[in-house]
Image (tube, rainbow, N blue to C red; front, side, top):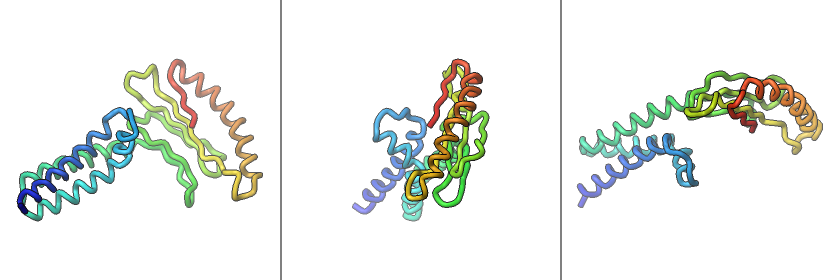
Length: 178
């Protein structure tokens, strides 16, 4: 009975590690896959913890299989995490772009209190590098509304100039502004 329970726990550890690895490469087609992709770093930690417990019980084969899957998932996850552009500020301020695909070029757009960045992303089978631009504008509340009004006006000016040059450089590729 106890041996069966340990094998069950080891099987769950393998399953958790396999799901964490697979979730990074599956196209997001529904909310379940989206949740698994978002939780994959945590699933790797859980799978590793359960595998370590199973390893302590001397179930070498199952624990080593689970730990191998966790190691691969961590290696893949680490490679993916380094594909980012971040303009971090104090507290909750800042903005970032994280990509599953290679970021070819990136830049910070100056002049925004909470940050703005752009990135050219190499997406397989796309007409060209996909250009992503994002900003974190100051909110109209609870601080005075003047800061928000200033950034909205600046956003319009900055991005009309920036978007013209971005659109010209994009050619037939996609431009995403978020």
